[in-house]
Amino acid sequence: MSQKLKELRDQRGKMVHDAREILDRAETEKRALTDAEDGKYKELFAKQDELRSSIEREEQLAEAERTAAEQTLRNKDMKKGDPTSGDTEIRGKRDTDEYRAAFSKLLSQGARSLSDSETRALQADSDTAGGYTKAPQMFVSQLIKNIDDMVFIRQRATKFRLESADSMGAASLAADPADSDWTSELATGSEDSTMALGKRELHPHPLAKRLKVSNKLLRLVASTDALVRERLAYKFAISQEKAFMTGSGVNQPLGIFTASENGITTARDVVGGNAATAPTMDGLISAKYSLKTPYWNNADWIFHRDTMAVVSKLKDGEGQYLWRESVRDGEPDRLLGRPVMMSEYAPNTLTANLYVGMLGDFSHYWIADALDMQVQVLKELYAETNQTGYIGRLETDGMPVLPEAFARVKLGA
Image 1 (cartoon, one colour):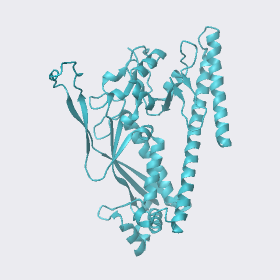
Image 2 (spheres, rainbow, N blue to C red):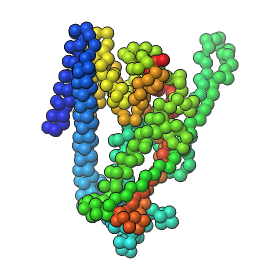
Image 3 (cartoon, one colour):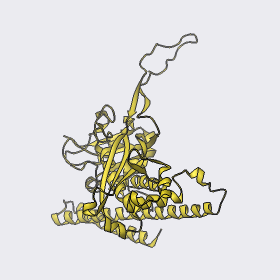
Image 4 (cartoon, rainbow, N blue to C red):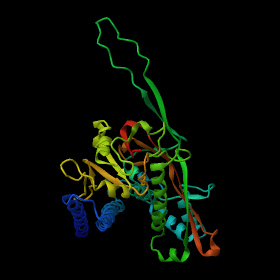
């Protein structure tokens, strides 16, 4: 663990300890929190959550630096002709120094700045009729990695790539046959026609974003494609996060918090034990045990931080807090023994009959991606304002495919 990570963890641990002392003091004195204590608790919890985000970013940065270092070593090996590291043909036409250099120049200076040889390098893998150029392989891979880091569900979902088809279908078992019959040697058991098959189908939907960047800024930035990648990753990640959480399924993914016969039905809502304005210990325990035990090993909780500020105060019958903060690198906080993830786009309105959280095995959320990330450069359109435009496009769809793998926490009436 780096010294900075250790310091951040120590600071977070102290804030969590101080917050718990406030709760314990009030409980020992058998009274409710005063306004001052409640305000201090909320302040400490908000600060510890900020530190949690800082810790996650530091861990992600450390992982990115490690990956970049490994890639640098592999590139050096390739240039030396190391037979174990592959060759240019295997890496593909887009993974060449010529393509990378030409693409970076295209982003920073526009198509007119390219020489004939640079244009040919780009046209090795571009759709000139469509007016766009596909990003080089490292650009695309890093963009996808950034999205995975920023979007919770994508990290754990089962992802598919559609190379040519417009949609992806998968058979589902809509109804199981009845149990087999104990019978005699010559009998075959009762006839059963209850087994039924259904179908899950995903249609990748277009997602696009346009950025305008000052040409002066572009001249000052050493790596233009890195700048574009960072901002596009952020914009695309936010849109996907919202859709995977609460999307309607109409020309966009179907969200986990959207009750639907095509996704997670209301039969998977867990209300029992919850109050009308907050989840309770009994309600969360009911949610956990509404899942079959085989799902527990891969199950994660997901809440908004506002909801977690309430959940973090809950205790079991022995006075132990249900929520446990992480004390190791790379490990999330835990609730009732399962990891806790927080998303700014999970529901956070603590009102009767609304969803406030979920426990689920998110490998049963399927995502279908179509085509590469595409970047279109608009050099002349914004010339009057001394800006360059970039349009990023991708196509994706997502939906929960197995309702029983999820337990959706709903407040009482």
